[in-house]
Image (tube, rainbow, N blue to C red; front, top):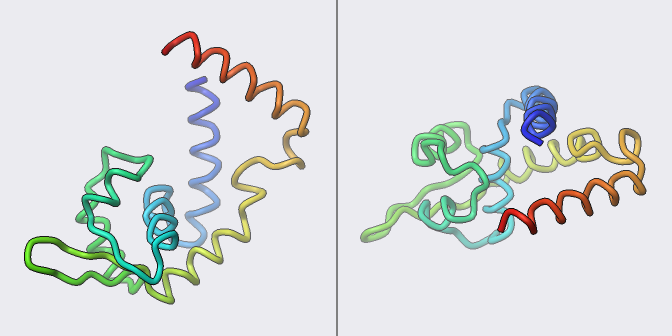
Length: 127
C-alpha cells in the first residue's frame, strides 16, 4: 500500500508542479473554496488538511505573497480566505483531475471497485 500511495503522490506532484502548486497547497485551496466567500482560521485549516506535518503558517504566508489567499488579523486569530487568483489556480488544477486521480483511462471502474473493497476490508481489520 505504501508503494502505491507514494507512486500516486509522485504522479500528482509532477502534474501540480506545472501549475506551481503542491499537494498541501491544493489541499488548502480546496478547503478555502469550500467556505468561500467566508474566511477560516489557520487552526481550522490545519484540522481539515490531509497533510498535517507541514508548516501551515509559512505556506499560507507564501500563498498570500503570491496572491492566492488573503489573510486578515482579528483580535486573536488570523482569518484566511481564497482570492480570485486562488480560485483560478484551483480551476486550472481541476482541468487535470482525471490525470491526477488515475481515472478510467488508467483504471477500469471494476478494478477500482475491487481495490476499494479490498482496502476497506483491510482497514476494517486494522481498526
